[in-house]
Length: 619
Image 1 (cartoon, rainbow, N blue to C red):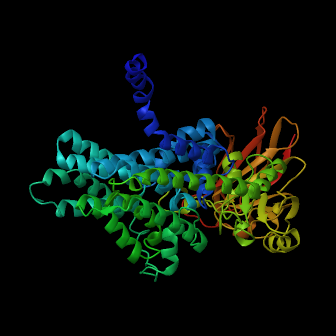
Image 2 (image 1 turned 180 degrees about the vertical axis):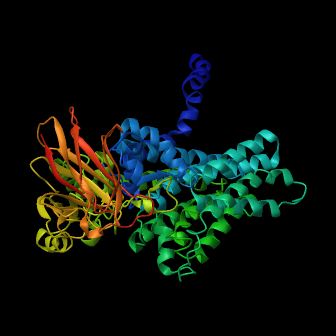
Image 3 (image 1 turned 60 degrees about the vertical axis):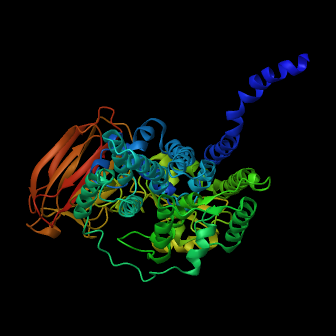
């Protein structure tokens, strides 16, 4: 009798106490596999993710890096992409862009299943379907590297859950809570925000007593005002004509199933995904639930997926990206049966499927990083903080493991990790919070990254950059160098100007260096507005030379010449210089400074600013 009396005690002590932990075991296991996919591989997959990392670094350098970044970039806080960058900014300053990118991916991977579970509970669906949130986190936006879109998915679940709860009890605290989620969603991703506003409108209209539930829609008023204000400010960017593909294609239907595995449509992966879905449905034999709160998000997402074009409002991949919303909202409209043993096993099968997909991702990431390992090897042959031009999209940009275009933006990992400017910087897009400034970007870059066989790639590189020479070949990752302007006294680190290209020992248009009738053999020919960063190459106390307007401009040219350091200290300022005036002499104390910035600033709207810096020497 003794064992029978103590058995309930031990059961309560060891079994019942740890029952909640056992129920959460599938979530914990999937979370660990997901974290391994993020932190156990140097480079994540995602076509655009490297560009996001590059801009994280650019924003950090805007605040604490080379001073010309303040002219090259501008910060726009009123943009739907702000949230991801605002969250990343302090991490990028402290830990660097690479770690920051992984932190952002971790936030997405862990918050998506948790917020999905929260939403499922709010609409009366089975919260265990939240396990599929791990697949949603690594779905279409992840494969494409749409970081802001990925971050918007858990915010979408949070907003919809808050909306449902405040719809049942529309108190002011609940309304404010929903408003905060909606505001965060707007400043994260505009497309997702617009979709959620459509959900909200339909849910309010389809309520049994829509007029009586007016308080449930109060939060949408300030959200709508914010959206209209932004749209009005960006109208010049958002009126592009849409693409011709208004309706779904077979490629888009393939994407619906292959998106958890690859960015572009892929039939083999679509079959694998379809088989996994069929297996779960066969075991669960679910009932379809047609309540509006469950059905509206899925139906609207499906409609957008079927009819929207791929290009709309200067944004690409519009229609296809709605596949992730279908994946996210579909579990809410089904209810697994529980009347027999087989049906009750659906959750175990779902866990095995989610874990298997995440493990496959890890294996593929391992192979992908072996493919891209040569890119990191190139950095050992590069000077830190050097500017980079990428010709990867013009050579070989497809990954054998992860599919088409996955290497297209890979060169951005170098500037994200080591600093410097990237020539195809995506800060030109109107949605980005860090954007191109009024000053032209450099037109020449010290290093060029390409991919492929040397004999095939080198002629392509040389046809574009005449003086490019091969520096290193690392498993078909090729590093070329375009020799910068180098003299015995200094080298040009970076130069940007309003017109033409920086010239050594010539005027900007190729004419001789001549100021007020006097010819000079050596110097730099530029055009206002211009910023030239020089690195001093030998020891000396002073840096001296002359500056003026080239005789090509006759008497029409005007400019203001200035020399300063990174701290902003002005070491020389010429005042307004006119064409035909003699060259102005300068001598500045170096006092340990290793780099100087030469500026030739435009005066009013003058367009004849051929500015020459001549006979530059370190003494």
